[in-house]
Length: 222
Image 1 (cartoon, rainbow, N blue to C red):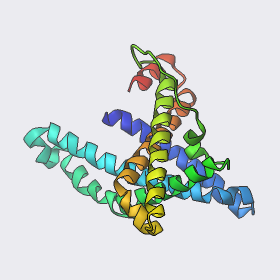
Image 2: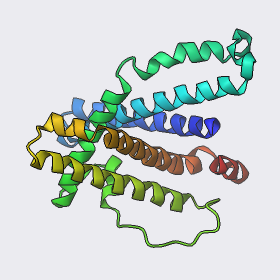
Image 3: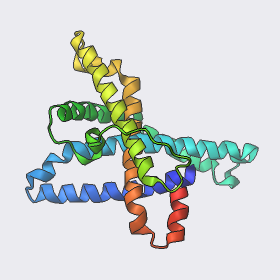
C-alpha cells in the first residue's frame, strides 16, 4: 500500500508542477485561458496537499507500528521520519480547511455542469455517464475499469454533496453554515476527487515513464 501510494504521489507531484508552470507561464503572457484555470489549480493543490500529507503521515505511522518496539528506536529510520513529517499535515495549510476549499470548488462545479457549462479537467468525472453493470472476476490488468470506478464514485459523491449543500441553503442557512453542515461529506468528496486524479495521473504516466513491459505490469499491480 505504501509503495503504491509513493508512486501515485510521485507522478501526481510531477503533474502538478507541470500544471503550475504552464498556468504561471500563460498568466505571465496575458493568456486569459490560463487565468481561467487558476480556480482549478487552487482546488487541485489544496485537495492534494490535504490528502497526500494525511495519507503519508498515516502510512509512516503504520510502518512504525509494524516494527513493534524497534519502531521507537532511531536506528530503525522510522522514528525520526514520523516525528519530522507529522507536522506537514497542518503546516502550510491545515488539512481540513484545505479539503473544504476543494469541496467548495466541487460544489460549484456540480452546479455549473448541471447548467451545461464547461467544467475543468480535474472534475471531468462530473461529465461521465453512470457505469453499466459489470461482471469482473478480477481487476488485475483492468486499469481503465478501475479509473472508471474511481470516476463513478467521485461523481456520485460530489452530486450527493451538492444536493445536501443546496438543501441546507434552501432551509435558510448561509453559505458558510451550509458548508459546515456537510463538512464530513465534503472531506469524503475531497478524498474521492484526489483518488480519481491520482489514479488518472498514474494511468497516463506509467506508459510514458516505464518502457519495459514487465516493469509496467509490476508497477500496475502495485
